[in-house]
Image (tube, rainbow, N blue to C red; front, side, top):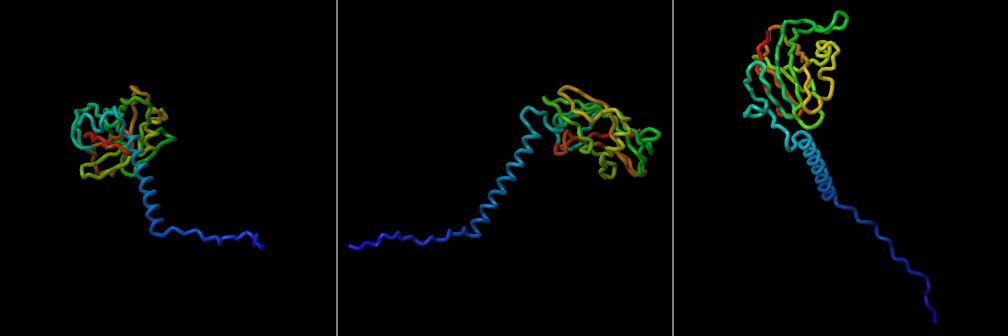
Length: 200
């Protein structure tokens, strides 16, 4: 008897490629999940159980005017702010050989910041802003603020729970503008609280 002992090999089939539509759906779902996780992380980092609500003690929506009396403390997130003075009479800040000149004029805001949370936290100067009577927004000039604080650490440090620091924020505003309010934040993503001010 003759038997064919040669091993028969089945032809190898090429792997089926997934359809372009299916691949697009998979990619979109993965991207959506990543975005949701990122957003959830931001929210969890900014608003945790037990944190004071943004804008306390005001009961209005975020970044609305709290109308506190002069020197009255207001809160946003894990920080409590007390504005003590606003001086808009300067054209320069700093020492003789290390100073900054305003394009318009400097408004120097003196305030105290206290950490009312349960962990160390940085005060972020660039997250703070001011508004004039026409509603124009001005960002804090951090370099001018460094000169105005005369090298004192002031806001360039972490605040431990319960700790507070006093320092100055500086805003460069046009000579014809008049500041009407500050908007203070415990972080760049917080709701913020507005504080009416009356410059000297």
